[in-house]
Length: 630
Image (cartoon, rainbow, N blue to C red; front, top):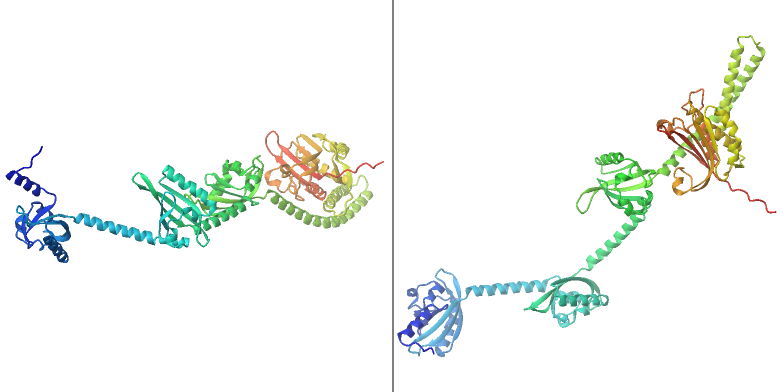
């Protein structure tokens, strides 16, 4: 058992405890004069013991705190043995004011002490921290109370425990009406289930934060969109409730809805456009394409087209390179370019494009609108050809009649002159040459008249196979230096035309083919009925898909030079010597085909083993009359 120390040993222990106390200790007399101070007092206010002994305990106090301190000192004098607390400011030796917290006990009647004992310590740091905390709390409360967003607290059951004024203002409630109310009652019914499940799951899974957008209903029945962040609030290890910040996003939602409708209209406009629309990078990656572009190029869907590179769509990659070089100097422009369809068929495309920068990274790319003008250009060319033919026809008709009258007089006079000249007369040969030249001129005028005639035709229902086979012997006499092969496959095609016209078509095409092979070769003549589909009819501009009669004349000659191909059907254009051709043969064929409702096309290869030229005449099939009922 530990015994209480006695004598000097007790004094030493007391002295040690006092000197090493964390608090400063002073003993004052009844007048407030310092009679004893512990060494720790020097640490509190910075004064040495000899500087404070015999001095008034009030002299270092802040003037504003002296009165209260004297009142507390008086209470201490009146109540011996009772601890009296006090707080005041005291001046440190360095001149600063320190907050002091003291406990004063009257021990004047105790012989061992005989004074008023004061335990005091410097609480300046704590006071500053408390002040800072109060300031922080005041600022936080000001922020919460004046925030433009809804801020509230709920317990774990979902009842409001606090709402800021903004919540009451936006929801049209008084603050007192919201506290204690369940948060789900402010959510529109069609969102309540989803909201309840979300926040229940957040509590169960202890998800720190969630975000949810929903429609809320105010007290007056108005609806508004809120975007809400909810955070768990912990009390130790347990969830004490949630705190939330919700913002009125009605305008944002309205803007998003307008944007969505705008994007839908834009997408509908692009997807439903009749023209091909696309976006591609400079290296040819197709970023977007509408169905019209895929259909125009023969692809099943836009995704299939987007798997290709833009260079694959051009007839040659060099064409695209030239176009990019052109657009490098101007960010907008138009051009006619040749593209290639999925099946390899060329297509003339009117391309309007501009350079734009991508929104995400600013990379420049092309935005283009493409229109397939293959058929339109062919029709325009046909119109120009028809207008040219019509003008030349009117000219030829007038010239032919007048020239025919002149030739008749020349030929008549030449015949009379030859009749009067004897066989040995040296002028007889000149008269005969005049007759030959006049006869040649008469032949030319007949061709001119055939080319330009406008009289009403009287077509018959013709079996094209029979017409071709019946003209076979005449064609063979004209092609004695080449091999002629006549083919009439399949059912006989019936057409409405004048027999002479069909014969004239065959005659002109076969003679042209013969003249293209001076060293011999082969001419194939085919007469057949064909059913042309939508893709196949593209080779015959201006014609519609359906059944047709077709005449094909194919030779193995040298082909037609590229610079001459565009003039093939022009009147008086010929690559032959003037003595061998007038340049009217193909013009007559063209006119007969067009007058019958058909067309003429050709293809030619000037090199390689399959070189030669192929002309195709397309004529509408005629409906065959039914046998009369008996």
